[in-house]
Length: 480
Image (cartoon, rainbow, N blue to C red; front, top):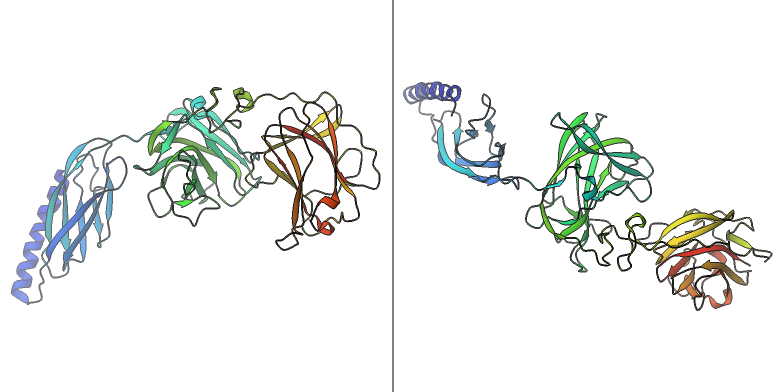
């Protein structure tokens, strides 16, 4: 206890003595505070943040002295009407005498002291951006957020490497991800803190999502915690508590019970749910614990969390997938007439509102040029969609075939589904047909009879392509 506080207590004691005498001698209205007690709890995973919840019979207010010898003035003395008061000691172990004083009108103050030992444990450093290679940083798949590492003035005022995230307002859920070589384990320690810098004095919704759980179990999903920054410019510390009621399953599993696990990926969203354009800094992400090493199933030097071909070896520069040679010649030029074309340089194409929409597929899509001919390259191809217009469906009922040209080095199947989303669920809503036995290494032209489909072809709004995986080059999708 410092001398200033001791002097205050002496004066407080004298005044209480005089007041009590006056009460006893002047009237009989004095009351007595009894049963004073308090509960001490640890408020962080490091052990140095301490909460005190006081209670008593007759007490209406409390003064909690955390008795920190390192405190300046009375910053370690907190007034409370009863709810928990929290104080953070220095990042070191030590024993402190915590005193709670209960007060009430016309009553003598009552005090109680308990010893509390802080066993400080430094937080696990999940990402300080000094060794960027170990973090396996990834940009948003849609290009909405780009992450780089630069030397900047950090929260402590010194120069260090920080993560610089540029969000371009491309979507509502843009994020960058961190993919360390070990899993992030929140089963025992669930608090993660992030140093965050913003140049606008606005409160922003910041979401931290943990993805790719280690346990392959049906009821274990990605989890997330949403917090809000203060409406200040500059550095601040954000806290995400995965042991609190704020943790939820990630979309579409928000309503399901959360089962904590180890996670391979950490994603950070700024203004979650709202497009945002700006530059934001991140540093010193700490908390939780390290779990086991993230596996490298195909032993190609690319860990599974960033390997897009986990079961097939490939170089890191190609996300762990084998490099597939582009066909040297384009698809043959079609000669059919009276067509409704979806994708072909030979015809005028109808409008397409979405290519490869985000339906949870692994499929990537790149439009490339082969000898000047536009071609669709589908990688990691399990399924994809082509959405025309939900409000203005395409009537192909007067046509005879759906046509497609494909070229693949490694796929073993390819099918085309036609969907009429205006129809109720049932036989006329959608149907899928195979292109037949796959031929690899050359362009193949396929015409599937529309008579094979049970779909109501008067209002097609989606074409769904399904494959076995690998890479498939596609051109000339049309009805004739």
